[in-house]
Length: 91
Image 1 (cartoon, helix red, strand yellow):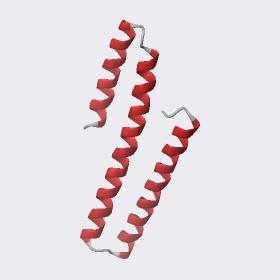
Image 2: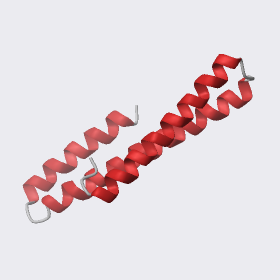
Image 3: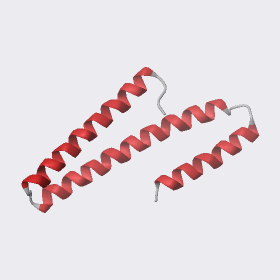
Image 4: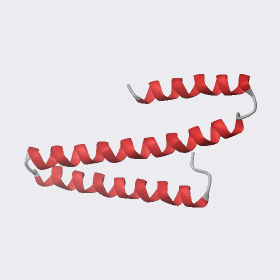
């Protein structure tokens, strides 16, 4: 989770942008838009969500490994946690 004010602001801005994309998709579906543009919007939303996930994951990794820098056992446990986390999101 982003902890600095700048990171938090950046993540919230992304979430709001994604919300706008979802609202536009909902309107397109309500109006009966053609499949092509709807699929493009879905793909754009998926890309935005993946970007958001990557940013939050990066922040988590940086924070986690800074805390474990001097402790080999803690670092090993953190690596296992991160691998599990990444696997769960790649399903």
